[in-house]
Length: 204
Image 1 (cartoon, rainbow, N blue to C red):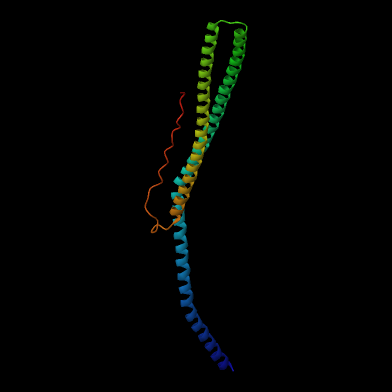
Image 2 (cartoon, one colour; image 1 turned 45 degrees about the vertical axis):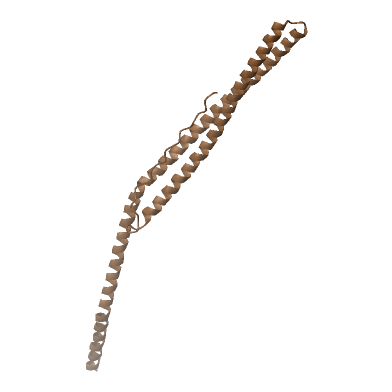
């Protein structure tokens, strides 16, 4: 009976050793796979850190572009307010001069009706012509101010288009930066757009 149990134990030990010999290479292979996967993950993390560091200049360009757009919007608001004040002032002067001229014209016409001489009539005619010339000048000035306001509105639209273009270029650059190094085209950062200068209409 003791011999039989010992024989069974030896056989069980042999089976266990055989299973061990079979499982050790399998686990060794899996360990190598896990190590390679861990190394690949660490390499990808390092690559992501490098790409994030490369994206920092584009983030700064985005912030600078947003600050520039805000500054242009503030400048546009100030210019529109100044233009509105100038237009209101020109219109007020025009209406005041028109009322004054109409009043003077009525007085002169009354003088003529009351028997003024031909010299007074000629002077009145000259004065009316002068007033008409002044009115034409004021009208041209008002028209120039209105054109300037339209130019400011067009400039605002152009600045907004430039902002959208800058943001699109920034997004394209960010997407290109996220591509693998082998597929990424070599190119420099997008050149900034040169701002257009406003042409202020002169008085005719």
